[in-house]
Image (tube, rainbow, N blue to C red; front, side, top):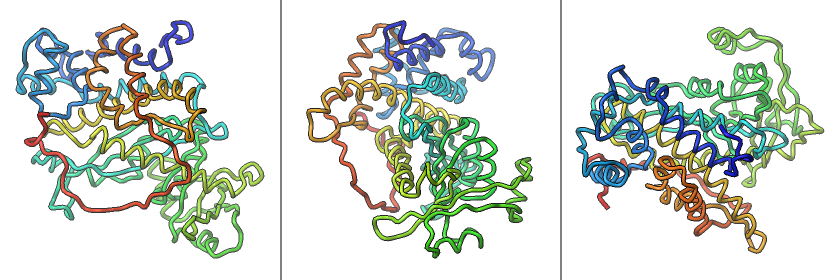
Length: 433
């Protein structure tokens, strides 16, 4: 990546320029085609155009999207759905993972980041995603027996809470373990990260694994966790240190499967009183009680809500569950492309937010970019940016991102609702308007 201070471009502009260079390289094409003969002949939708099409937020009826795209950015009047389907089968879904890794590694190449007490604040969390109904998808991903045997996949994200960047994400069959999906993200963690996890992830073997990786953690615990911890719920103490000299049987078995040698370790328990009167217990590697007093953990753990907001954005604004095909490969292509789109949006938001900060001082509230509105402005314009080195396209998009910002009202709380609902998107009912 070029040095943005030398080029005069913002960091985000440089990162997108680098992505454009990678997409246009022969080496990237060779790595991400399924067979050697793929993308060797000139077609209506060549390799680069196919990548750009996936990144152009395909949300309306597929034929309309194809016709508009090929007329606006190609050299032909039209392209059929059949031609697109044939072309997409030649593309490895890992292409979008590679581009996202390129973007993320470039973003963290310098130290210009938002941090909490010098920590990069990371959250891993899982969810589910309804999938199109086909026998191929049902056989591979499985179904939700409680929801009329709806095809469903399990997803997991590794998310930077302060910088709103998705370091890594995966979609897998519904029977996949949340622990295993979380472990797949660990290659993206680095020493002195602070990992915040919900109570579904609390386990002694996980504590030890993170400590050995020099990754700090704050993890909410379940009510029943073990004799050495359960008594702490009713104790008067708000903070205590737990020493693990001998692991429980399940911990031993899990460590053996992971090839990790057990060694005695310590972690800290912190009691947190919620606004509704409930008590939660957090396990943390931040054992220094003077540097990290128990009072700070309530607000720290509350930051985990950022990953829930990210899921809301992915599912309802980016429409990550609005797929364009009935095959396993199409699911992985659409999903990985949507994660890349989310990170591209976050990069541009950083520049827009920086420009807005100058006017925030004159307002009653601090304001932030409207992510729902801004994702709409990405349509077509992201292709212009990736096809051209004209800075006007990027600058125009940054200005559009500042339209109708949202006030930040501190201290508001929301009740979480879990409800059953019908599938939002059907392949034969996609919008033409």
